[in-house]
Image (cartoon, rainbow, N blue to C red; front, side, top):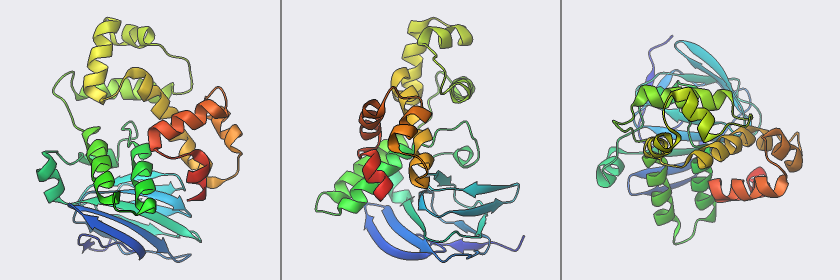
Amino acid sequence: MQYPITLAKGQYVGNKTKELVSGGIIVSETVFEAGMCSDWHFHQNPHFSHILSGGSMEERPQSTEHQLPGKGLFYFPGIPHRNVAYQPGTRIINIELEQSFFEHHQLESPKERLMFDANEMLNTGGLIKILNEFRLDDAGTPVAIEQACVELISSKQETRHPGIEWMNRIRSLLNDHWNNPITLVDLAAHMGIHPVTLSRLFTVAFHCTFGEYLRRLKVERSFTLIRNKKHSLTEVAYMCGFYDQAHFTRTFLNTTGTLPKAYRGF
């Protein structure tokens, strides 16, 4: 591996087509030439990316991953990586957060494990909310994006109780059974606590109810299926465990702030 270069704030390896800078937040859209390969690099600030179309192979010191449309990603500062074999028409939205953003809102940056741990939920729906505001681009956009970024980061804030190990057990179980019927009582029995206690701790730990988390898991599964455009939205709804397309559409809208059809057209 060559010595990685540092990308300063707002810098990315692709060609930037649009950018919004406000309140320590940098939202940008980048496009990439087919077959392009980047140098090894790392970023100065933490940022999230959402692949709208195309994709690439991302190499990290210990792994290689195929990144597909609909994928949400987090990049922790200082972690080297490079992308190779960009596909034709690759477009990526980046949401970069400076230290001033975290200080102003008294928030902590997501931890490094969000970049690597498959059991961590990235909240790609939150990224799509920001994307939707970025596309609207009106007078209310900066404030709306700021609020959406606060919600995005707040959902990742750790809590001393019930503890990270407890949260990881919950995440792992729900990720493994995302499309199987599981009740609060079932989960409580698995964790060895009373359902009422689990309900209270779950909300404290995950900043949402148990039911909201399950719906979010299903919506997260739909992003790549929607972006690859191989299936109808009705098929996507059933593949992700929804009763019908109407139920899927309502849940998707509540999670992302936009409709599945609109997201497919982004």
